[in-house]
Amino acid sequence: MKKLAISSLLILTGILLTGYAVLVPMLQLIGTRTTGVVTDVRRQGGEPNEMTRNLYNYGAGFYFVLADGRKFESSCTVVGTSFNSGIPRGPTPVLYLKIFPQFNVLEKTTTFSVGNLILFGTGLFLISLPLKKGRKRKRDR
Image (cartoon, rainbow, N blue to C red; front, top):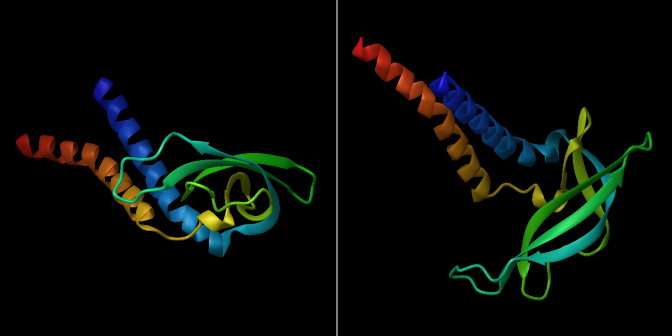
């Protein structure tokens, strides 16, 4: 029973990572665009220990209102310089899924990047772990 629970958790986590890696860049094609309002931008943590200096993580809080009056609040993390997050407070474009508005991102963050490939690869790896163990057991019998 414990092995089934662990396998299920790995597969579920892999599906979520893979889905996120594919869906965020796809929002440019299948998402609905609206105008949101950035309400809060704060620097998070200190300077990362990386070769590129003066890059910091910023948390941005925003909200948007649908045509039917429902308001959705969300947040995202972006990388900016030591003096600028790259996201000004005020109106900004937001992309969301029309059938599930809780899945939303700032339009600026929907570009395809190496991070998407890493998430996709990690998700596939997590999905394959329990499946590989299952195949080895069948061969041993």
